[in-house]
Image (cartoon, rainbow, N blue to C red; front, side, top):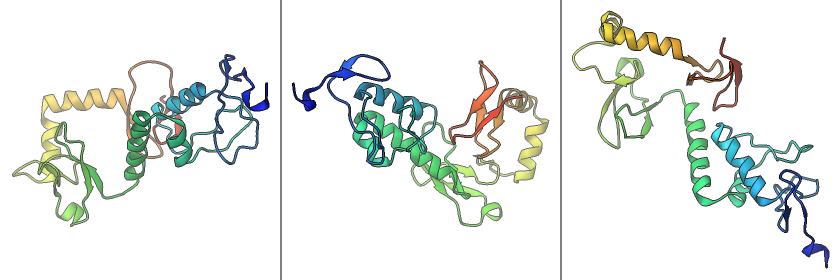
Amino acid sequence: MSATDKISTCRVCYNSASEYPPITDSCDHEHNICRACVVKHIRSEIFKGNVVNIVCPSASCEVVLGYCDVKRLIPADLFERYGLFLLRQVIRQLEDFRWCKRQGCGWGQEHSSGGDEAPIMTCHACKFKTCYTCDVPWHEGITCEEFKQQMEDDPHGAANNAYHDRHTKQCPKCKWPIEKKDGCEHMTCICGFEFCWL
């Protein structure tokens, strides 16, 4: 049996495998993790929201996988999701970017024409109007201040705000809203920042 035909044990699942893909060109360790375990590791990181700093799964390696490494190692459907998460993380850093508030649209855009001075943002995809300042569907016929006052005065709005205040917090780093349903108090945001819920 030649060295290339060698079947050995994966360092993660301890199953025998014949394919141990190189994870990155920068890794200087032996390739001893099977493809299935590499894919599981990357999938886990993607679903935790960590798409920027996916580290090699080898215990002693801290090399971060690049975009091309991830593309080479995972199936196309998972790579598509990775790409969407990566895009959203980059977009979230744009100060003037807002998502369309029409349910089901999923489109977003930068609103650089006036900001708070011209708060109506019309979605390029569906033409739905969103208030740039309040980040809600456009409140026709009233100012942002009047809208905020109505939200405070409206009992249904107050109930929604109370629920929101009890069950969500903004990530201290990127300000993304995080909802806590159950589990421990340790939170990890999709930007990678970790904090305590308490």
